[in-house]
Image 1: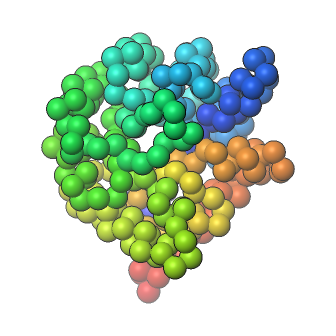
Image 2: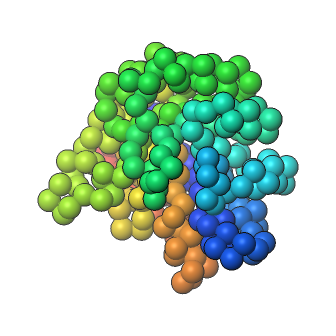
Length: 251
């Protein structure tokens, strides 16, 4: 278990704003550079089938111009596999994707879809790309990820983020249990989706997590106070929660 908790900043929605006008501004690559300067540990970008935000050119430029590790979120399709193999990002996170969804609605069914996923996990791994599977915090999905040979899982935190006041602790416990189980299996465990200033601290305090990926909230907050400020505040909340949790365990 590592005390270090990395922050991956998802820049998809900088591209969403750019695409609304069909022009070059705002530039997601500029946002990635600012994120690096503000303390991000990595950049995440989801190249969707319909290209609703991040574009192929964005992935090419991020691969060539950004020093931070690039985490390419992708569906398990031949098209996306070919793109990943061409650009060789540091990591590829396989996510479920539905054309009509507004945002990712849940975790990948690694258990039910194992036969389909195996070739993608194997091919990406053989290319030296760190493979992660975006899954719900359920033992059956973690076990499937392990059987598939994925070294990393990213827990979907959407149910926790959207939970009503009386149920959020139940969802948090699901995340805690899943993260501990993943680490016990030898999987590196990440988490993300719907995290904000208000709910990130309990997740950041989970000792078995190694990385959080946060995007939409940070881009939204950047409208009001700047991207640099938003990332630094999130980084501070994560670090404080992790330090306090470490201190409590040591006491």
